[in-house]
Image (cartoon, rainbow, N blue to C red; front, side, top):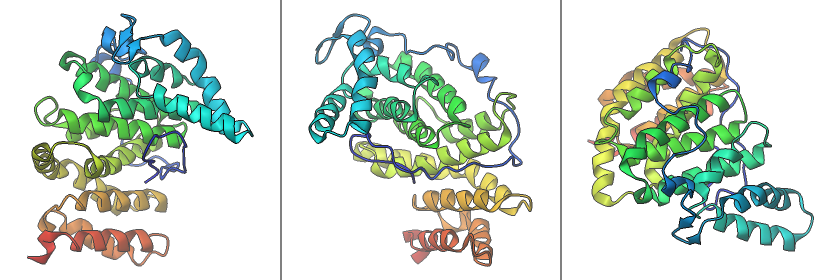
Amino acid sequence: MGRTGGNGLAPHGCSCRARRQTAIHGPLSQLTCQFPGLRDGFVPLPLLTGATGQGQNGPARPRAHLQLSPQALHQLYYDPSIENKNLAQKWLMQAQVSPQAWHFSWLLLNMDKVPEIQYFGASALHIKISRYWNDIPADQYESLKSQLFAQIARFAGGSKIVLTRLCVALASLALSMMPEAWPCAVADMVRMFQAEDTNVDGRARCLALLELLTVLPEEFQTSRLPQYRKGQVRSVLAQECGSVFPLLGQLLQQQDSPGFIKQKVLKCFSSWVQLEIPLMDCESLIQAAFASLQDPELFDTAVEAIVNAISQPDAQR
C-alpha cells in the first residue's frame, strides 16, 4: 500500500493515484477554526521542539539538523559514491529518532522542498509517534493531531508518497489515542474530509480520505501496541466500520465513480476486513466486490477483497 517499513528513508511508489471529484463534498479550511494552532509549524512544548536545548540524546542542536538534513538527503539520493550514501544514511537514521526530529520534521514538509526531503520529514514524524509515543505530553495530543490533519490537507493534491506517509503518521497517532483520548477517531476523519474546502477539491479530498482509511488497519496490524491495547483498539475499529462501509458502498455504487476510485475502495475494504469484521456487517460490500469481478480493471482487486473477507475466522463459523 505504498508504505515502507524500517527506517523510512527510501520513498517507493505509492498506492495513491489522482482521483476526480466524487460524491464527497467540500473543504478542509474549517480545520483552522476547529483546531487551534493549525497554521503553526511546530508542536509548542519544549519536549517536542528542542527549545530547551536538551534532549534524551544530549544537548539539542536543532539549527544544525535543519541545515544538514537536506544536504544529507541529497547525498543519500543523488551522490554517486556508495561510501557517501552509507554515511548519509547512518546520519539520517540517527537524526530521525533524535529529540530534534520533532522540530525539523515540520520544516522539511515545506512546499519549497523536493518530495524526497518532504518524505523524510513525514517518515520522521511517523517514527516519533509510533515509537516514542510516551514522550508526548497528553496536552499536546490535540495540537499534533491538528497539524497532521493540516499537512494531509496540504498534500492531498501533491506528492502521493508524502501523502501516504502523513496518513500513516496520523493513523499511528489515532491508534495510540483511541479510545480514551480520541473515542470517535474514524468518524471524525470521515467528517473532516467531507467538510467543504475551496482550497482542496473533491477529488483530492476523496483520495486523501481513502488513503487514510486504507492505511489505518494496516498500521494497526504492524503497530507496537501492547497486547492488551491491541485487543481494545481492535474492538473500537470494528465498531467504527459503521463510519467506513457506507461510504465505500456509496463510492462503489455510484455510476460516475471512475475505475481507479472503485479500485481504491476495494483495497480499502480489503484492508478493513482483515480486522475480523463479521461477515454480516459487510455483506453488501462483499456482494459489490463479486459484482466488480465483471470489470477487468477491478478483477484482481475484487478477488483480493473477497478472499480476505471470507478467510477471516468469522466466515468459518
